[in-house]
Length: 223
Image (cartoon, rainbow, N blue to C red; front, side):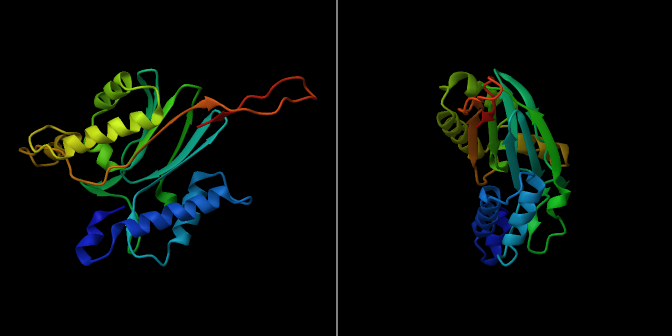
């Protein structure tokens, strides 16, 4: 969501919630698309009559193929062991002005980055809003993964808690203050107070029925 709407009396969470509700309905429909751009487009149409705007990241895991549409400065990373296999790049028109869909925005779902990654069992998929990426460097996240339990929910809690601590630290050098320095604010320090949402999933082998015709048990992946 884009918090600036709160300055004119609009709850910025309403549009983001509507967007995700529309995306969920599309993804779960028997006729729904598995293409993340199409899911985002359906969600965008679903939210036409809600005032507000939001960044958006839609990811679909189909077998070993993780496909995604990412618009703005939310995103995800794929971690294998303690190595980053993949990490999205933020989309910004200018510093602190991310791409966003919604009321009055020229950005549309088709402006999203189209992404594809091959994953394997054990990989961690760590998704988050800009409140995560603006406050924790990649090495900070990997350190948490290394020291936390293997439970994805626990990892997400630890990451969100650390991002919150940094966001409230006025003296630390965060990814946001580092970017600010690179964009003409040489004395910038501290984290960025923002909404922080973190979702972590681990890729696992799913249970499927044995193929009696071929005598081979097909293998798929699920998060």
